[in-house]
Image (cartoon, rainbow over all chains, first blue to last red):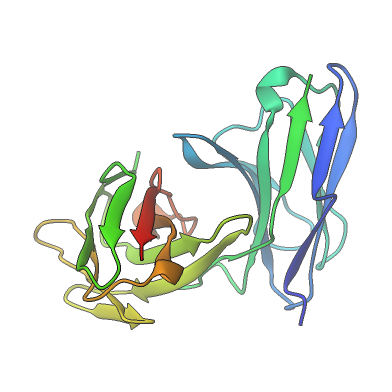
Length: 114
Length: 113
């Protein structure tokens, strides 16, 4: 059982380049999330999708776009990368929107923008 | 908005020592409370949770009790192991109608043999 799978694991971009981070879950979860983790900042929510066909902004959405391609997949796109987007990105999913549902995380994508 | 305060790390202990990581939160209403753990090079994973006042969550020897009166959810373990070295995150969820958890900044635990 793979759980939440993120690709790629590592990526280096030059300022202004674009890329898409991929995420897929095989647990039939309704909700999916994108977080970034920076030293001393904890996790900050970028975007989330409560269910297939819906997406909403989180705490730090500027510079990002998302697509909920289907129930399994939720991608994060950087249209024009900036050094401030150097971070570790985590995708997560949860079973339903109830407050007792824990999040299941992927192993992250480490992105460096030079 | 909601906020979470965790004790700053790193917390450095010897094997078999007692562990406490403090967590307090501000929230609207009564959220569910979670502790997540992140091992090096991995994503976060659920460690334990409590969904109502006075509930005690437990897993792998770790415990935390939902204290409504002090809005706290401190993590404890009686005897830590080297394998417990990780970053621990406190995360309330469900406050103000939002089911999305608010994560603390994380507390790094280093256990020496």
